[in-house]
Image (cartoon, rainbow, N blue to C red; front, side):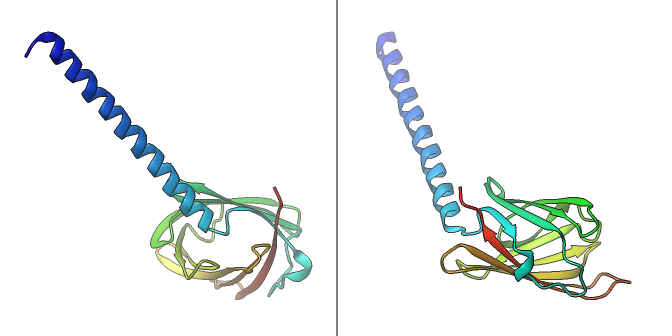
Length: 172
């Protein structure tokens, strides 16, 4: 083969490789976008304290939950102003695959496990030191404007927690 033909062949192979790489990246981004679009929890949610119930209480002053798509699933940031004025921030990144993922910002649990029930509902198990101590069920309304989380936990030496949190979705 002549050197000019070899150069042309290598250029064509390089262009073909570049086209395949771009198509692969585009397809991957489209798939991520499609998966994210199906997850109704994505966005910012503000706690409606008046519609929520707390046992044993007292309720927090406020809570804002932000859920964003992430390459490793969904990234959640939960910012709370407690009844006594303390602020806390809990974060995790997890998939809905039943696998344990680390949580930061809460001394009572260090792992979360997520499972999708359907397009509107998901369940979470919260653990510390390998023992499950709480579970939650999240349901988003059909119109996508309200999220209700039913939470039950038993941390040793404390009263049982049975809370129902009602959140309003924030408009963009």
